Amino acid sequence: MSEQNYSDPLKMWKQMYDVNEKYWGKMMNDHVHKEEFSEWMGSVLDFNLFCKKMMNDQSKTFLEASNIASKEDIANVASLVINLESKVDTLEDQLYLNTQPELDVTALKKELDIVALKRDLTKVKAETKSIHQQVSELKSSMSNIEQLLKQLTTTTTKQ
Image 1 (tube, helix red, strand yellow):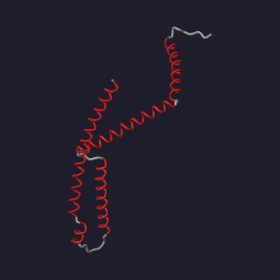
Image 2 (image 1 turned 180 degrees about the vertical axis):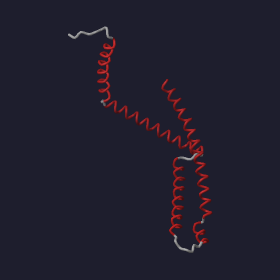
Image 3 (image 1 turned 60 degrees about the vertical axis):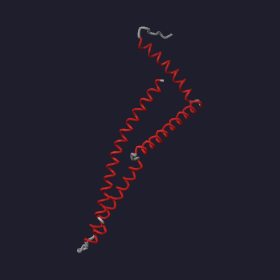
Image 4 (image 1 turned 60 degrees about the horizontal axis):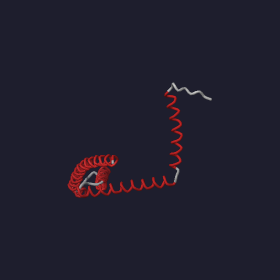
């Protein structure tokens, strides 16, 4: 028979911990492998997905009501800017490739319509600035929403 040393409380605590860990580990492992647990986890996941969808829908409604740009709006403006830059790059390439000694400046101005391009670029810059401002407002709104959600989560967990 093994002699136990009762004068070492840490050794006794470790033995008690090992016995409890084996028991609870086996019990939890058996519980997790049951069909009921899987069904319960599925329902929890479904509920979480439902909550996420509701949050997305509410956020979209809030953004529309607040007249704040959404991700899609920002992506559309970015696409317009990229297309405009591409057109300007193409025009620049055409200018550099044009090696004719006599360049018809008036025809080139008409073709490029520089004034229209500058006007369009100014509009895009203004829209981009507006979108940046709206994104900043959205970030602060989302921060407030996150704080409210944290408070709501805290109060629901306390109940």
